[in-house]
Structure formats: C-alpha cells, structure tokens
Image (cartoon, rainbow, N blue to C red; front, side, top):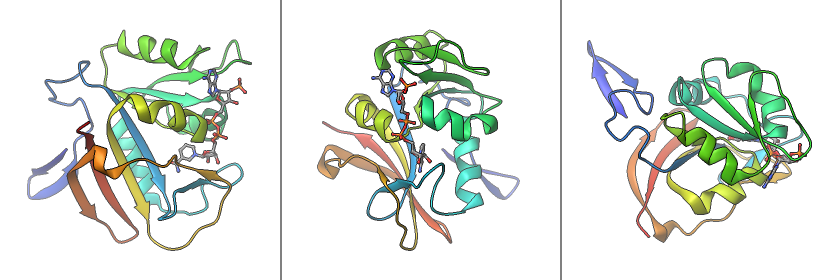
Length: 178
Ligand SMILES: NC(=O)c1ccc[n+]([C@@H]2O[C@H](COP(=O)([O-])OP(=O)(O)OC[C@H]3O[C@@H](n4cnc5c(N)ncnc54)[C@H](OP(=O)(O)O)[C@@H]3O)[C@@H](O)[C@H]2O)c1
C-alpha cells in the first residue's frame, strides 16, 4: 500500500494496480483509541485530519459498507465510493444502495468487482470482523472517551503486514492468519 513516487511517499488506494481486486475478502477500516473507543455521539472524539484523509484515500473508488447511523454521519464525504448501507428501517438513501442484511451488502459489493471496505460503526464492525481478511486500523494517540467501541479481537489470529507511526496516530495493517 505504500509507494514512493517522485521521491514522495503516498498511500496507494486499495485496488489500484492490485491484481487481487475483487478476489480479496472484506477489509475493515477504522480509527480507534488505545482502548478501542471509535465513537462519541454523532462523530469521533478526536479531530485528526491526517487520519481521516488517509481513510478517504484508501476507500477512494472502492465499495464501502456502512451501518445506517455511520452513513448519516460520514456519508457526505463519501462521494467517490460505491456506498452500501445496511439498514432494516430505510428503503432508500441518497448516495447509497440500501441492503437489509450484511450478507446482501457483501454480495452487492462483490458484484461491483471493487475492493470491499467495512467502515463501521460498532454494530457493523461487530458483524464483519469475523468475515474480514484484513484490517486497516489507526490507533489515535491520547486518551479519549466515548460510548461506541471496536469489538475485541484476538491479535494472535492476525499478522502485521504493515505498521506506520504518524504524529497523531499509529497505523497497523493486519491480515488474518487463522
Ligand atoms: N472511528 C471510526 O473509524 C468510526 C467509523 C464508523 C463509525 N464510527 C462511529 O460509530 C458510531 C456509530 O456506530 P453504531 O454502532 O451506533 O451504528 P452503525 O453500525 O453505523 O449503524 C447501525 C445501524 O445499522 C443497521 N444495521 C446494523 N446491523 C444490521 C443488520 N445485521 N441488518 C440490517 N441492518 C443492520 C441498523 O439500521 P436501522 O436502524 O436503519 O435498521 C442499525 O441501527 C458513531 O459514533 C460513529 O462516529 C466510528
């Protein structure tokens, strides 16, 4: 995912020049505190633009599965992605395809032949981490409180493919090994 171009490092969006495009599993993408807080009210309890821009670069042009609540919060920023929103209550949502189950959402994303990201929130991570092949996790430095958490996961079931230290967060790409 990390390439060097003209002496400048940039993050390659998943799927770009990627021969695995469409074949790989679901990729979890999330930012969290060291104690797994992901949300506070209608947002995240930090303001780390560099991390949010990284998120937008990774998902650019790809398929993004989100829960109805998270799409209400972040959907306006997802204009260059194929958005698939999971909801039992909504029938139509502007800028997204609505699916009534996780399985339908994944099948719908797979049919697009794009890299599939699961971008939360907590309810969606809970149901998609067990199905995921990879996780792109940003651990925000500092202490934050909130009421929404990333699910616990067994680190022994995952290997670290890439780890990067940024000023305000640490990024880890995990790939499932079991
Ligand atoms: N830090 C991060 O990376 C990150 C990323 C995303 C979100 N967040 C945070 O997470 C919080 C939102 O998370 P959340 O757990 O409250 O909400 P959510 O997962 O975004 O959305 C929940 C909604 O998704 C639908 N849903 C969930 N499971 C379903 C299923 N199996 N079948 C059909 N529909 C299903 C339901 O919609 P209906 O009610 O319409 O039926 C449910 O109310 C916010 O605080 C947000 O800021 C953080």
